[in-house]
Image 1 (cartoon, rainbow, N blue to C red):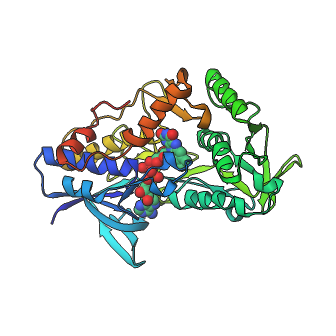
Image 2: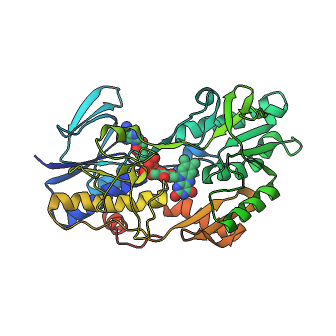
Image 3: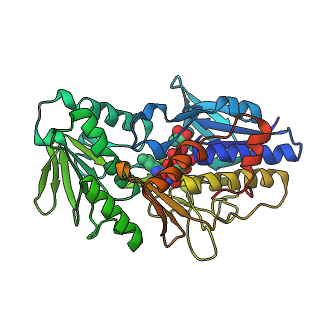
Length: 399
Ligand SMILES: Cc1cc2nc3c(=O)[nH]c(=O)nc-3n(C[C@H](O)[C@H](O)[C@H](O)COP(=O)(O)OP(=O)(O)OC[C@H]3O[C@@H](n4cnc5c(N)ncnc54)[C@H](O)[C@@H]3O)c2cc1C
């Protein structure tokens, strides 16, 4: 019987983990090691584009790529990880319970938004998963059929982080296309921070403010949300904004499967991993992407919940789980470079380099970089073994 590397999740981290593990076993000519991916769909869902229109097209097929690289795919959703017996129980697409054994497990089940405010689950939208982003898009497209009102014309984006900013700055153009140029549209970002873009570098904040002002996107600062209902958002200071479209973008948590692994987790539920990306204290379990709390460099920086990190974490974890099976040395995960490219809708974009977020380009020039990243760089490689394995090499250049 073949030895089994089981990867849970086919996102950025899971897909690259599978390709990288397949690459190393192929290099060592070890056909007795099977690489299996278990995920609900055999597609890479391009989450960084979920704030854009046309969301249902943002998924790339993975079966041809897996077939070309010898990766086995099982459609299903993991429910229970039995660490002692090295088994994973999962629901098949026919909703039947099935079990699979592993020798080494890679957890790559990503993250999800956690709608913590009263009423958010029932009344708010989000752009976190393909289905929920598609629900928002459908709702926006139907706004014109609702009677004109302040609530119809107003969108409140809760959370002024990158996702909130990208969505909010995209919305004025989308709302005008839906409601017409004459409609008094209003887009508000509600954030608890006292300044626009509070957690970012001063020069990045300045650009975000400039773009927001030019696009007419309002910021409601020091905003503590009390509750959301069918009429809009109520804040703790008593303020109320009437809105039929409230979108949550904050409160992201690692996949709940992380809680089934006896190990240390951070406040977002991410598993602490060592430099080979093995879960600390678990000899046969690795974590990667949004479920991993990993050190990126010697300066104390840690990986963020971004696909920039998930891609590299995936390439390293795949290499290292295969190295573990093969009895060869792992490659310590390291990702010194950090860039950001923030879409600012009709204004353009802003591109920064380094952890101190030095602004390198803005407007149309940065937008070109953004488009290259989100429509090419982060998509799966060509479904050809040589191309895919070359890209999956953890030491191949990335950003
Ligand atoms: C709107 C938005 C904008 C973003 N913008 C950016 C950006 O500009 N730049 C950037 O770098 N990052 C961005 N991100 C973050 C980025 O998308 C994530 O960090 C990245 O997707 C994490 O990759 P992952 O592989 O860990 O998880 P995911 O991509 O979420 O993949 C998780 C995989 O696990 C599967 N899965 C989940 N549960 C189970 C289960 N129980 N059993 C089996 N499989 C399961 C899922 O189906 C999926 O295949 C954005 C995210 C969002 C939502």
